[in-house]
Amino acid sequence: MGLFKTFQLLAYEVPTGAYDGTNVLSAWDAGPRPVFQGGRVGTPDPRHPGAANPAELADAHSRLDRFASVVERTYVDGGEARRWGIKGILKIFTAPEFYFRPALPAQAYAYSEPQAQVIMSELERMFRHEVFADWVFVCGTVVHFKQLSTGPVYFNTAVVVFGGPQGRTFRLEKQDASGIDGVPIALTPGQHPAMGPRINGYSDRRNHIIEAHGTELGLEICLEHHGTYRVLRKVLQDRSKFEPQKPPGVPLHILTAGGMPPNNDSIGALTNGYLLRVDGVAGPPSSLLKVIRWRSGQVGGATPSTEGATAETQAVQPSQGLSIAIPHGLHVPAPPVKTAADPLPAQPWGVSVPLQQINVYPTGDIVSGQN
Image (cartoon, rainbow, N blue to C red; front, side, top):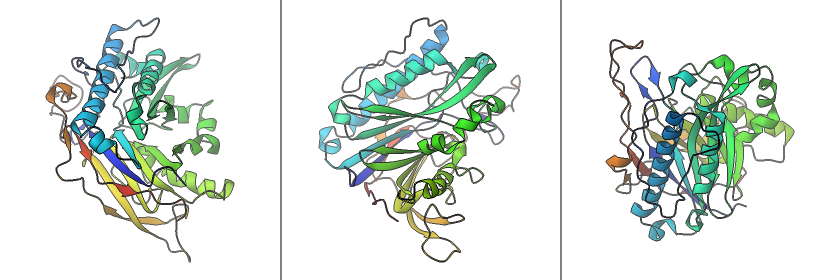
């Protein structure tokens, strides 16, 4: 039995990509570095020995300071201990895919490996204050590349931070890039001749299920939720064979995305469990779906581990009047306007750019491990 009986989704609704009807842009200038005032969130410092690219460092500074400031404002403007100090509620603060992606076209809009490692280490350090002991931070993804003897490999890493003094960090690599990710698909981990067999094997795919204070969380990054991939569902199906003592699904399925609507055929949550989705490209910018039941043509009760089963879901609406506005000085800059000189269509980006805010959803029960 987990430590927490209920959870609450805090959806960081912010544009990390924009769609013009044909193309997606998922990296642009980070804007001026916000002035982080400090508080409960630790002051980030993305500097590292041997930093050789001032533009890369400036980008990392802006994004880390903005993320730190937004979390601090969420805590303060959301009511501080009067709201967030209520015991027994697991707070899940979730940002969309591509949150940490630099505007560096010469590097395929990816951080160098040293810079990315420092960003991820700083995210782990920022949330050590005791008030965050019952918070989980899904910090979107960090896009970076590693130069190997055979050439570069491009990673899109989800960073999950368990807050508090005893906090820890979990990292999950996106297996394959989509056609809109803006990196060479053949140079991603799932396609790499040396890395592919390992990252596509069960022992690595099993990492899509993590544990937070005794509660299992399923995690997917955008394309992994598509009906062609259904990564978490397939992991659960494999787990039912290799680890039959484990539950057939997870209480909470988290999707950090940049252009992926919810797909009931891909949900890995148990009956009365939830899909928590935050998306920086596709509307709506966040979703909370409760699984009402599982349906299958097979005889007997269906579960997320049942091949061909589909979840029936009910949308949960955000709590009225509880959203937390992000001040303009902490906004991610609007996507740029395309011009006729650009190789992509001469249209403004931003058809789906959301209002920048923290959408606070009602608390929900964390279902037990059996369907």
